[in-house]
Length: 137
Image (tube, rainbow, N blue to C red; front, side, top):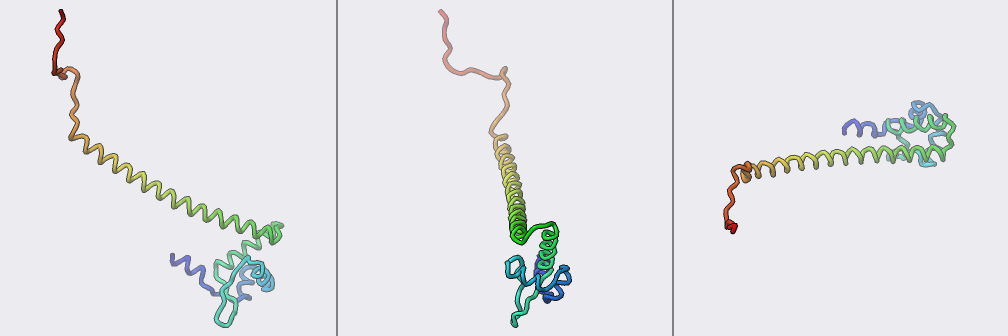
């Protein structure tokens, strides 16, 4: 968790973030206006970019170099975020499933142990019929 917080910490001014991402600062401002990136602001309203922001800018750069316009970039980024969320949800569900399966296994073992004391195997040759016998006339 610590590593995640460090990558979200606002460190870079716009000129440094632009250089790290390989683009002009004006391009970063455009991306911010489009909502593609949301840098944090200082008390004096200066933009500060985190490592995660710079990685996102690099991803945007990759997509635009592939020929996508900004609308396409927005869609791809939204789908990637959705895919990541679904992956996290799937992992959580797999964990819940594994826990439920383990609980079920333990419950089956408990029930089987409790039945072992109550049931005694009997072979057919040891069965004795009690009750009235019919008389054949």
